[in-house]
Amino acid sequence: MDLSFLSEELEALKGMGRYRSLRRVSGPQDAEIVIEGARRLNFSSNNYLGLANHPAVVAALSEHAERYGVGSGASRLICGHMDVHAELEDAVAKLKGTEAALTFSSGYMANLGILSTLAGPDATIFSDELNHASIVDGCRLARARVEVYRHGDVSHLEDLLRQSSAARKIVVTDGVFSMDGDIAPLPGLVEAKDRHGAILVVDDAHATGVLPPHGRGTVDYFDLHGRVEIQMGTFSKALGTYGAYIGASRFLPLSRGRRSPPWGSS
Ligand SMILES: Cc1ncc(COP(=O)(O)O)c(C=O)c1O
Image (cartoon, rainbow, N blue to C red; front, side, top):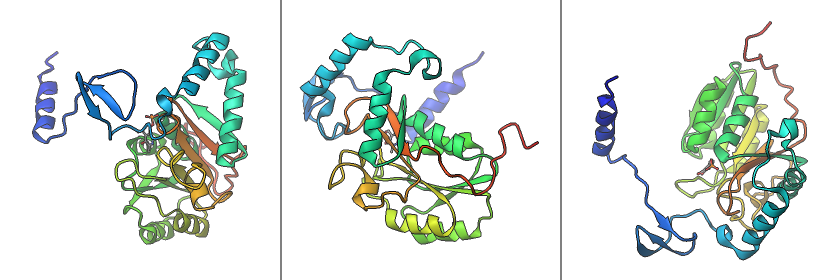
């Protein structure tokens, strides 16, 4: 098999300035890190609260590894659902002010899971143009129609919602945008999705642990408790570790339109 097309594609990426490579860090994440052997000030990490190497977090992880081991040994539906999973989900629900929470192995998996579960061919997803790549991939996996609205533009979103006759409408936005760092106009998005019977999903990967007054994310920041159907977030940014969660009601009331099963309606 001739694989020269791969090196041609890599050269093209380099030509466009889009080729990325790994830089090796020695030692823990901190305000100063040793990168490629040189000590540098670190303005790039998502370890916003310094928890990734906080002694209390490291001690808790070591203690739990002693008690439970380092792997669940099975999927949660078989015999891998442990006390610690249930305790973690209770803590997340409390933090987010939701009825329930569910953890995922990464933020990427959470966004894929949310969007492919909620949306199907009869749904339309309305997605901010600067949403994280995992949301873009979630939209693709859902096989739903996708309408991209201008960044943070509630009136553009409202126009698209008005024109849509989809059986199920899902609006999805980063809470704090991962690249630009600005905050989604959540009050306007909530009003718009309520007027058009849509579900709102907020990705608070960068808001959790960061936004005032309690570090609970954008819903708390705008005091919109109970008005956003799904709050998603990660443990890998301010919370310093790895994995992700969604906070929502125990049973999402998805009454508008029946979703066809992935294998087609019968
Ligand atoms: C806004 C946002 N959502 C989701 C993710 C994906 O999270 P993970 O790295 O845990 O897959 C990221 C990660 O950078 C992110 O910035």
